[in-house]
Length: 153
Image 1: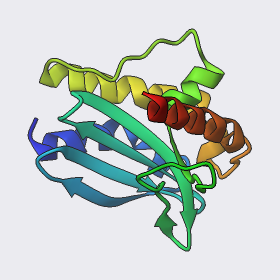
Image 2: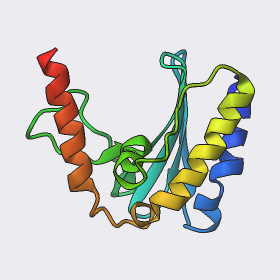
Image 3: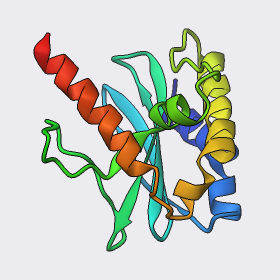
């Protein structure tokens, strides 16, 4: 997918973050592995990415500190401070019956996935979008448990 088409689809479907939540479109990433765009608010952000390596569309939600989106360390340890989580993990806790797959096989499926994730974000994570991070401790337990399980294999 051409990067400008990806960015246009993100603006179209995630534009409510700007219009309703007061976010602004932040930085963009474009390399051989990833296309991504940040939507940044006062205290939270959403990063929408197209990951070629995994053939998937992903949405991350995180804290904004001093105007900067906070990312997680590459290696997650027990004492790591986590500031960002995937929408998939949010949905696993809040809407476990909603089975979304980030995987795509065509350009039209990419656009469809962007629209589906934008709707799911609005429906299931508005509290995070306005800076209520009370779900983050539960999400942190999920991520750290997954990291422990991966270490054991």
